[in-house]
Length: 249
Image (cartoon, rainbow, N blue to C red; front, side):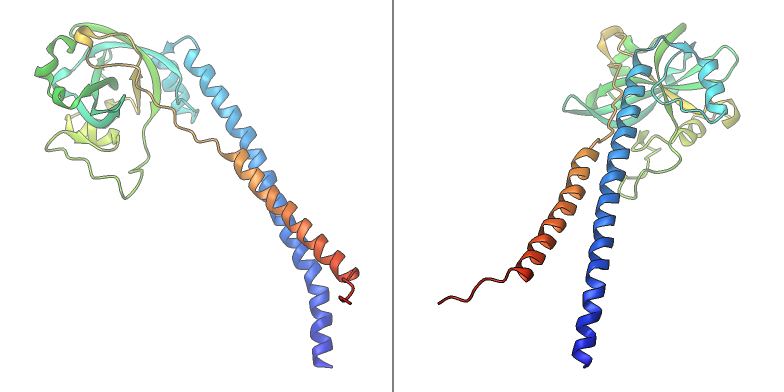
């Protein structure tokens, strides 16, 4: 009798387990499809932002202050570069190691905007190696707004080395404080300068990288495929139980 009760319990539990497993697999597949549509919409939105006409800095500031998404929006700003206060972010470009040059742009109202002017190779890190590219006087920069990071991206990212003026992650607050700026006078986001050439060719502008993986379709196929496999295996098992092979003569 105990064996019979166990067999009956398994008969009841098995379809329930199979149904729950199938529901989970189908739900995961559907969720990935939804994520796919969201990601495609996001990428399309970013593409539109990048080709849109640039807007004044004040518009992006207002958008950021209200909690809006400022990432990759075209913007212009006018001021004077403080070349003696540039900060260097370790980066690669076109297979070469070097730095992105973040230079504070002093606006007419006395505030500061950190501009990623672009890439320089490793041996051109110091300003005296690219004197012609040190723009002076009133300058207007056009580029893409980039939000500040809320914190260090990962524990594997090295700490920023202020002594050597090498940043491994874009800590806007530390960039500003190390330059002696009052935090209240620093625009709370960056601008990546566009590809407008600089004298002598350095820094190389237009280095913004948009890296948003879109593997959701692959994941959806995986989950739906597992659901289909579960149905197929269950069907084969059910068929064999009801149509046992005749014993060999």
